[in-house]
Image (cartoon, rainbow, N blue to C red; front, side, top):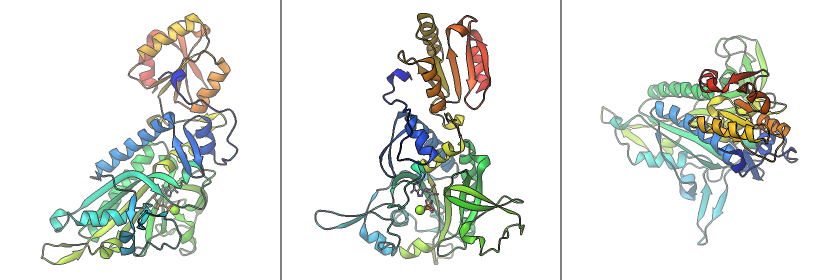
Length: 416
Ligand code: ATP
Ligand code: MG
């Protein structure tokens, strides 16, 4: 893509109403725009990153046999009364009334939609297990929408729900999904900083599991066991007497973290409410066991930025970067732009953002490139052309290298 065609521009000044690193950088670099607290528009660069994250999540959910659906956001009052969550204590649900006086809720989670839906199709043990997910907007009346993309009032979540004939099967599947989550975080470049943490579970299970990413400005705190690397959420640390429940070690380190994902075994909490049973091999009616698996896409995107940045801007991990290569025609000169245009043509097929802007200085182009954070920068200038070369640099590294234009394609293949 030509940067001169990009309708967004970078912004020099940090937005005054944003405190978090992710929001400041993503807005300045032109990835997102704020509509109001907790609600953001995805701009072309942001949408490219978002789409890559979405594809990674989709691939990993499909690998654990998740089937993708897309459920409504507008919910009738009745399904929420069935589970006794219409009058939620926290007041997280946005509620609205139709012209004729009907009550609706905006979906902040989807157990109330998915459980009766799957019930329509599952009657026997032969129909189980089933796992269904969606990637869709959620609405939550959050009180602390101050962390940019990390805590939205409207945000996109991947939520998966699984249905099983036994607790044993649920547990087996639950472990498989844990693996899928770690693969997602690995591919998104935060694998090394993300740990499984125990948290208080729902009404029926002792623990739920959170995936917590260590960052200097995280909203959450975990106690990370120095031996087995299990995290303990603040809520349960006292309960455990400051000892790791897994390996009994007492060396726990306090870390600031962001909760990027959360998985629960719901067991029969929702199947009971919707009277959802199945006929087992012996012909008896048994309750369905459920699990649920949440992952916020905006939160994940924001977390990646919180982990990968420096004083000049974002440093995208390659699998989620909006483009792989930032090609820069450094000077507004015939020779430079001719060579750059030719390179741009040759690089088609690779994801390239081409800074062909004629009204920007070299300094402005470098600053924008660092702010946007594309993994590899390729600079064409009078100086490099004097040596039939271009200058190649990784965003995360200081050292640049001169590479002969004739060898560039081959070089980039090994460099990426
Ligand atoms: P938190 O404790 O941070 O409010 P939660 O426990 O309410 O999170 P869940 O309801 O389990 O989270 O949602 C699943 C996932 O959705 C979370 O792990 C997080 O990645 C994401 N998420 C939750 N709330 C938000 C939000 N307001 N904005 C963006 N993502 C969110
Ligand atoms: Mg919450």
